[in-house]
Image 1 (cartoon, rainbow, N blue to C red):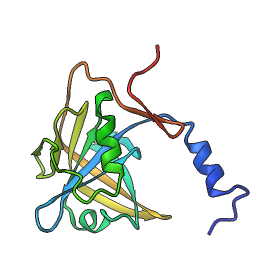
Image 2: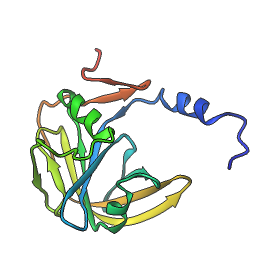
Image 3: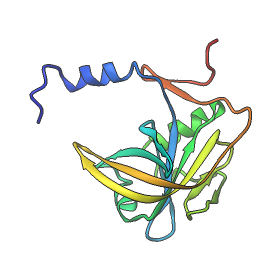
Length: 163
């Protein structure tokens, strides 16, 4: 519990003013089934070695799969993938039903049509607050030329960047 002079709702509202890209983090569970969720907590860490990070709420339904995984993929969504972002943010039982994907370099699901993807092995995990921070070493990355990103700002998705 924090002694902060603001509420968690005020913190969330202030954080919503930071525009982010939208990703779907994916791995395989212990039975080889694809698992994934929408996240905007993604960032670069280092170019040498190539490291990225993201975080997941400790109480997430996806947490058991990610606690056990050795690899994951960060799928950066393109502007036309808003419905996919909403689907993977929902409580849907089978988020992958009808979704085109392939097995990536580290064995994790790579979604088709994404703006870019970072295929990683788990380098470290850090429990902090109500989340776990994952640092991944990038094994392979790629991008789709000309793909505009899906952006999240102020609690809403934006499919096109204003100019």
